[in-house]
Length: 359
Ligand code: SF4
Image: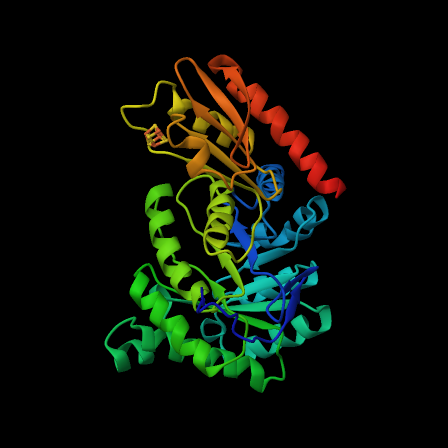
């Protein structure tokens, strides 16, 4: 089948050791919700994000105390870190001088002279800059011109701010244009994608709790990614940021853009199901958090359709009465008791991943 998917050509930039844009895979980012001033808590959260597969992390810098511990945090972690700064150019300079891999700013909010200092420092320290445009903080003249935070308004602000940095001779830039209104976000990115080859960081802002965010992010980012737009993504969730990483990889996997981590297929169950499939799926999902191997696992309620419908799965279980059939690639291996499901499945998974890695 002919897919419309073809990645838009963008300039490449490096955020620490992660390439964004060019021919690099779409990178997965997240942001801590711990108080940045609390270094142990922030580092612990970043470690959990790293383990879940987060490739770049962002931390908020709300005040000088937060700005002053950035270097300490960076020394304790293993993935590139971006300092998120609003308005205050001094915090941006502090972040750059503590070797942050990137800063996220809205240059228009910092004043022309200040931004020249920030750009100079970013050039000296090899710091990437994300120009982060947000529907909630657009410049007043643009808001007046468009009558509100429309897609055109977001795009104009982004392109103006991009030009501001480029005029200062700086090009290690990526752009984001976030809105909590999904159609606005999609249109804004489309407009900008047609006008610049600057790499784009996708996100739907204030997307809500897990289910709401999964819906909004999948639609907003999914539409754009399917059109080849987007070089790095962050799903935002009100809750533990570790869930953002799983959702982000889920979106990329669903579009066949990147296959990282297990793909768990499970049936909705019906009157034929005679095992506790709901709890099995939950336990399997929990046991496999952070797994990076690309593996298809099928958990099906019954043998009527199970192995056949999930013939593509690397491994799966199809339930019977208090028992089930273990199958690989549609072929039944053996019958197992319901109480053994999780243990046997995890053993199978670890054998398959070991074999895959040795190939
Ligand atoms: Fe029902 Fe079996 Fe299909 Fe699950 S696999 S929905 S239990 S028929």
